[in-house]
Image (cartoon, each protein chain N blue to C red):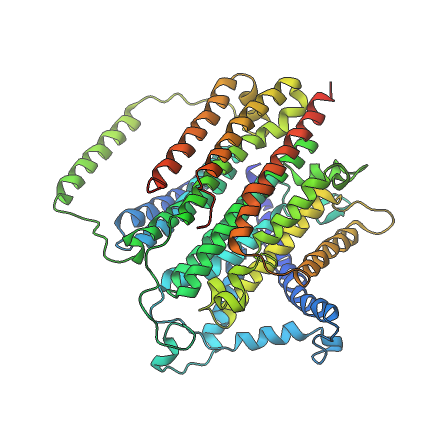
Length: 164
Length: 326
Length: 118
């Protein structure tokens, strides 16, 4: 097993384990805090794919901003005391069966498809390359993103300050 | 076995950087703070321990190591404990991309990452999570309020820092710190970007919760803010995180604006250290000169003054860099 | 390039170990004397009143919300900063449009009072 494969399995294990904690923990603040290792695991996976700019963004936005946002949101609610959130209800067995079926389906699809292996090395996604693509081929998407950000900001403020 | 030698080099480099930060930056920095404040208040600082009080912080650290390990019963043990690790670790991770000078074979930097400046912004934002967890995990009203306010403050001041980093990256044409320093071989960016420098200094002071922006941890306001319930060595580790972050931001300011290690005659590392401590002195000077600012004034200042100013600065810089470059 | 990040990973692991080292030391050598009053939460020396973990004001959430949007905007500025010089005037006008739209967002937040502390 090459070093890269070992690192991949390690990162995948960290991401999945913290994901399990997020979903099953009874303390909602623990769930939110467990998001951080899972985000950092995904960061590692991005780095393995040569996408270091995206990895930097992942840490900056997800681990840095979104976790803070989620923690603030949790602390605003009753659940901010951290205790007593029910993570399982009466339909847990049905849910587990559906999830298992879905997992089997995905694994069968992934292993049965004949993925053609690409040749050569992964392209480098440096900031320069990404910038070139933003400002040349994907300029409309780029400007459209700013409109999306504006709308989401306005919408969120509208909802949050509705009491005025 | 090439990779073993690489790993060994990395480990040794980490230990050196960590020790340098812990001793030269933090321990010496705390002592420097006390001496500088004493000088500005016309009194003498610590003088007894070691020659001229130089071993004072060492003595303090040894004392703190022997303190009892108190975890309040109502605190959340996991989050309480992980916050202590996250804050200093995130502050320490900043140092990977800071170029300390040059050696014969290239720049003296732990790793010159392609996304250097973005990496720095990312690790700075990790500190906020540690602070939130410390505040919440203590289950103490003062700590929680301090943690929330501190997080809100740090988060608002990260945007001007990000905008300034983008402006300097624009001037240098790269996100790599070594490229940015090399781009200042003829003219330091502080001359070309005085506004950005000022914005960065102000935002950096607010980012590390220093006066005049230290409402969140002032003794008369919130006991000690988010680390009220931490005693002994845990408290020292939070101080390590705070002072480490301050030194990292000052080092980044030297890299971005003051030409990094460039300078005549003296060896590059020495120039870096001189410029770094000059900025640290400015930080301390500001702390002991200005009164504390209220939290709403502080946040208003970031959103309504610093961010519009930095955006305007960015647009003007872009105009000159792009248009004048035809 | 992958090697770069290997170094960073080692830095993070060794750094975490070194940060945990003082904690290990105190666990080994610090004295213990347990009595219940010592472990009570600090509230200026009086018994605590009410829970610390209570509901908080919405303004914290609004600040982090606006922060997320502006952080994403800055993310888009980083690659632009790297290539703007080589792409010329078109890069400037595109970024001007981008920034104007987001400054509009800031102005909206300002007007709606999302940036107020009270």
